[in-house]
Length: 435
Image 1 (cartoon, rainbow, N blue to C red):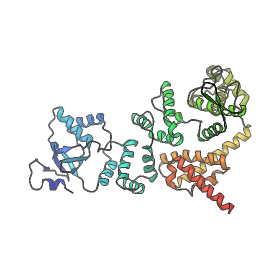
Image 2 (cartoon, rainbow, N blue to C red):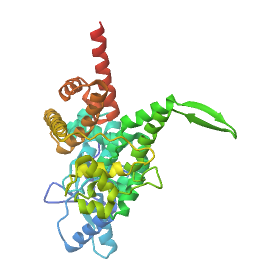
Image 3 (cartoon, one colour):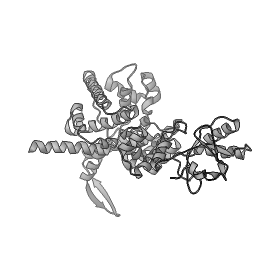
Image 4 (cartoon, rainbow, N blue to C red):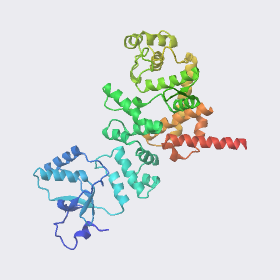
C-alpha cells in the first residue's frame, strides 16, 4: 500500500513538509473526502466550532489519511477538514493540515474511526452502520467486539437496530425516540411498532414532551393478548350477508373477551375507551392522581367510587390502585370488564414473589453482562418471556433461568428468537420425558 512518504519521497512538487511530531503537513488542496465514507453524519454546528478554532489558532488534532491514486483520502477527521475549508472561505490563510499516515486493512481504518476519542461521538445508528460495514468485510460479531472493545451483545443489538422499519429509524435520527426504545418496540410489536410509536408520539407531544420514552411507549396490549385475540377471531364463524358483505359470528362470551382486549389496546394507545357515551378520560401512567380529593376533582366521582370499591375509602391511594380505578372506570358500562382485586395479604405475597423473581433474574444477568444498559434491556426481555412461560407452562423463575441457560446467547438480543429457543428446549425436555 502506498504511504505519504512513498508518495512524495522522489520529489516534492506539492510542497510536502515534515513536522516535528510523527505527522505530515499535507497541502489542503491534495486532501479529499470520499462521499459516504465517513461513518459519522456531518454536524455543521461542530464544523463551525472547528472553523473558529482554526481562526483562533487553537491546536486541532491531525487528520488520519490514506494516500491513494486520486490524492490523500481522509479516513478520520472530516469535521476538521470541513472546518479548515470554512476558515479559508472566511479569509483565513491555511495551506497545510497536519495528517497522520494510516496503514493496514479497510477494517483497521473502520476500527480507528470507531475508537477515536477526539472525534465527534457516534450515535447508535452511526455505530450500527459501522458495525455492518465491518460485518460485510467478513468479520464475525465476536471479532468485531474484540476489535472495538465492546460486548458481543452490543454488536448484535446495533446490527438488529438496522432491521427496524425505516420510518422508525427516521424518528431515531430526528431524536423523537431513542434507539433502545425503537429496538425494544420493534422486537415486541414487529410491524405494529411504527403505528404504535406514531400514535404515542403524537400523544406525548400534545402533553408538551419532546421525545417518546420507553415508559411512554409501553402498551399493556402485549403479545399474549394479541395471540388470544387471533385465537378468538380464528374460532369465529364466517357468514355472508346481503350486499356483498361478510360477518364474523361469535358467542356473547367471546365477544365480550374480544371487546375487552380491543378496549385495553385503545386505552394503552391513547385512543380512549371503545364506548363513546360512557368513556372516561384518564391521565397518562405517570400522572394518575393519588389523593382522594385530586381523583374526584380531576377524574370524577366515578373513578373514586371504583377506587373505594376495590381498595376502601382512603385519603390517598397508591399509583397502582389509582391506575386500576381509572382503568375500571373507563370500561364500557354495558359490557364491564371483570377486575380481580386481591385481598391485601395476598397482594403482598404476590408483590414479594415478583420482587424475588426480579432479584433472581438480575443476579443471573450479572453473571453474563457487565454493561448496565445491556443488562437493563436484557432484564425487560427476559422478564417478558419468563412471564409468558409461567402462564403457559407454570415454570418458576428459577426453572425458567435453568432453561434459558441452555439456549444460544445469540438469540437473547431478539425477543422472538428467545421465545423460540425457550420453546425448543422445553419441547426437547418433553420428548425426553416421554421416552
